Image (cartoon, rainbow over all chains, first blue to last red; front, side, top):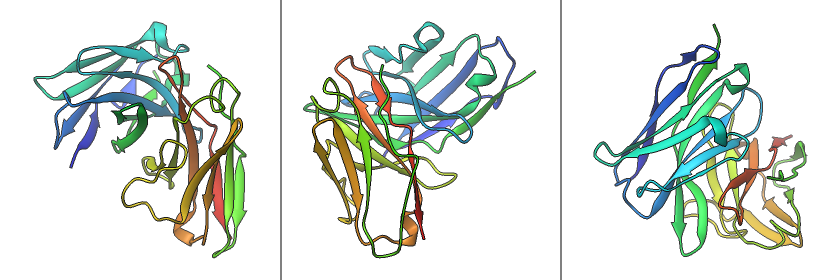
Length: 121
Length: 110
């Protein structure tokens, strides 16, 4: 059974770079799925950040694209998120999720537990 | 990318049925079936409840059903139970290979 686990600093300074990693266990990151990041500011809704395929192909939220980089490390079976020039508005719970992608089907079928990241000096 | 519109809140008594709507446009919800629904109880990660408008993953009770009419997708929960109290989000995979979520709907079981 595939499980996802986010890790990274819980506190980032304004103008700095937020860096998170999602470890995939119980399955291969090289399977026919995409791997995504979603965030949720306190008390607010879900916002998609971006996704990556094991080949390195990426798709990003246009509103965040200039600040986001998602990468994959197949040797460690994990993928990562970097968000630059952060402000308080980037304070949120960050989730990693698997995107099942079979014959046109798309859905976030497995989610990590989420990790809270606060942007503050 | 355009957002999907959901009602902020809905409520119902145990045993009743409730429907949560998710409205887009003719270019997104109206044109594609890649709509999915997620349940998020307080303090937990979202859980997939419905994919491709009306399909249930294994393990999701058949009290949960999805449908679509025109530019609006809907999630119906029948035989409401206290454990159904949660936030619910719709999501759409767009033709631009991006994802968009609805604003979320808080379901209260009275």
